[in-house]
Structures are given as structure tokens and as C-alpha cells.
Image (tube, rainbow, N blue to C red; front, side, top):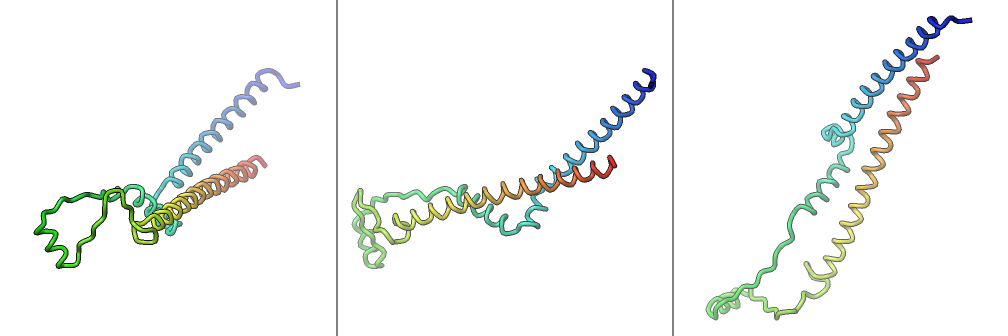
Length: 148
């Protein structure tokens, strides 16, 4: 039979090993997390994803162009008409569908933007899940090899 002192020493030794393993695991996890959020490394590994993210961010950040109404005098209107740059729209009148800036173009851009955002979210989520899964699998194999 084991005496209580040797059982206590064995328990202390196992606890010390567990603490060491825990410290290694936390250090590895911190190192892995830093790698996942290192944007330079991720841009090098996934350049097209970075371009898509930058385009989506630019689309969201750039403000929409404000339409302004300008009141002109008769002389300025005549000058614009002579230069063939005069466009007359009445209040409440919208642009025709199919023209640049019309409702068709806005609808298409909105749909493309929404799909690009969904695709980007799926790519980022998939990347993070795969990266974490790979790292945890590596850690599990490492622990198994040490315990043998």
C-alpha cells in the first residue's frame, strides 16, 4: 500500500505537470490568436478576400452623393442651354429605370453589395473556424504524443 506522503507527493507532481501543460496551452493559444488577427499575414495568405473586404468597407464608408437643387437665373439657363448641358426635371420626377443612377442600377448594386457582404462574412467565418480547428487538432495531437 502507498503511504499518504507518497500519494500526496504523486498528487503534487501531477498537479505541477497539469499547471505546466496549462501554461503551455495558454501561451500557445495566445500565440495562435495573435496569428489569426495579424492582418498583414492574412492579407498575404488571402489577397482576394482582403480586396473584397476593402471594397465592401469602402462602399459602406463612402457617403451617398447628395442631390442638390439649384435655382438659376434666366441668363445662366440660357448659357447652359447653348452648351447643351441643361437637364430639366420637375419636383417629384424620378430618373428612368435603366439609366445610370436609376432604380434598376440601384437595385442591382444593392443586391450585389448584399451578396458580397454575405460571401465575405461566410469566408471570414469559415477561415476562423478552420484555423481554430486546425490549431486545436494540432494541440490535441501534441498532448496525446506527450502522454504516451
